[in-house]
Image (cartoon, rainbow, N blue to C red; front, side):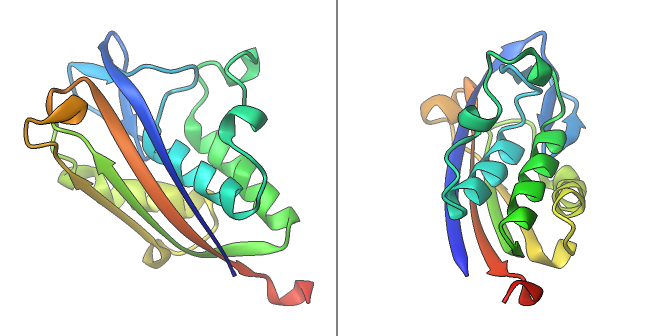
Length: 161
């Protein structure tokens, strides 16, 4: 088994779509970034890379590469899944948390879980997504940005042994 953790932060700005967990969420602001800036997917993908000792997202998907401009972060997660499979691992479980003041995430959590599970070729039973607010404190509470955190457990494929 291998364990990885990661966090990702993106600024909330006007003129961008708010996409978290591969779900477009109606809101007056969206996340600033080179890709679709999906902080939740970025945290999950980077936690997997960390578990595999493969570095960070910026190493594999640099913001200087036009191939990744505006791309869905689910495409990036699918690429990371392929790296994980090549190393002989599969998802044991994913536990992720989104810190965002508004809007409420509850209506979107199940779709986020399904999107992550699908990209990682695992059951939604292996994917947990939670959300909390900043309670008016800090950059999350002041609606300046979003923070996502993820932990993953990878298990070695049986046929690799």
